[in-house]
Length: 151
Image (cartoon, rainbow, N blue to C red; front, side):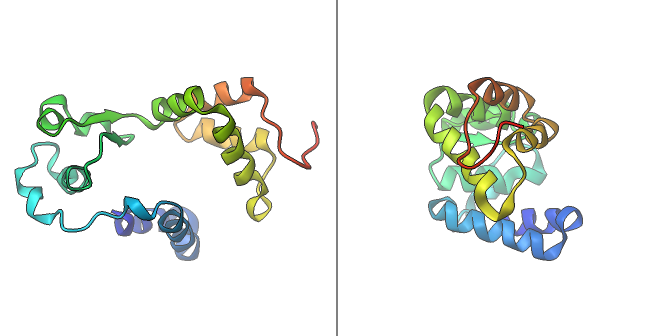
């Protein structure tokens, strides 16, 4: 799936940017790499183009599948595997509710890494990237980034 993501990102951020982003994901989430799921693909009943995603989630014993494509994973395709599908906006809101300090630290880390934009701009980018409720709620938390002014 990361190969597919890298291919899809290339048109937006170029080959180097896509490779860098996928590499960072592999480093940040080494346990997310799932192998040997191919034998399950044929048994999945979700959208045919997404059966490999569901098969990998099942093989990886995931409990939650976070995706913008929630309609491609109808309830009947998830129920046999005790999986729930969640939109990223809802997932991030849950994380913010459960672990506000960790979410704030993660947002600050994004701002500080590689000369990123100020937090307000990052939250604007997130709002335009289909997680607007999370961005709005994160703004209300008024997270502070070390060294960032209140401009």
